[in-house]
Image (tube, rainbow, N blue to C red):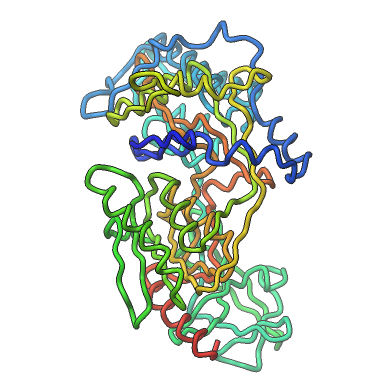
Length: 494
């Protein structure tokens, strides 16, 4: 892990499949501009849990952590041990989870706690299997929709996927969607609704834009829809899930396809064996900004540090960009200890504070950003939207495995002109960050949750949905279609 002291950033780092995000990714100075809607800031502040005392906060020493391994979780625990774990868990969530108030606060979480205790009481005998206990916790906490929140190894976030029929191609003319196979017929309705709600722009094998029938849903099976044609006929059509296989590849590689520069990056974590290539990724960006067109392949980018996307976009466009939104970091002892658990498991150190000698611990870092008017929280960080012009046609390839800092890359690129996104929606794991971890004391089940809450100006949680593309394309065809699209645009035929 690298700490970038100049921006008070805890660089992103992997722990048990989750990632740390910057503590304050949007500069505090932006909050002073007053350009964001006052009601948006007020709404965000209302989503921060209000602490009036800390007498029942868990002792830091009780928040132990070690990486899960074979045999680390006991097969059974007594009911009394399970009840103790439940009390412990909900104390940790109140003081260590930044999304606590967003998902209902005490009312929702205490109701879940009561349900868990009732489920334990309903089990016959004096003991509970750990797997059974884990399933109870996961079911009762199912109202959480957070790509960085997990209990016993399961992420509490429903996944939204694309369901589509790419073989049904339509062209849009004068507000109607005409079938390419039967040009005289157009769509009248889908499921009794305006067909525009069901049409997804895509790119065909010649680089031309067309529309396919599709929807994004959390359904666990294919979708069946009724389709009505302009001749009065109707039919039922299956929309099939569009799978996204993990794409392997380098930390950074620069290729050329049909003369078009193709930037490939799958990982943004600065580690001893990756930092050199990541530095080259950033260094090459300025020259790429002079090209007529570039493809940036972010498919299956599992995240890392937001610093690299920020620097890449800055050098590529020659300007800083920023999306509008708010962040707030918990500075409680619980958040600090869990975050320290993460840092320790990675062998990370924080730099010295000011001019003091030696490295700092997480508690000291968080104390430095504490808001005296909001106990338990750091100062709210806010930023207005900053866009930048860009003359280079940039096609960005995305899939459902673009995660965390990889999605930060997407968010920054959305602030540039002349950028199109090709593929399917990203994973959706941006609501919380700075993930800490601990183990429940008796069952040894792992809890991972974020101590930083981040929301856009609309205050909407997009976890599980992610960023949507401009052109919906099967991920394994995204590169080929992007090349054809760029060629069509540059030749003037698109």
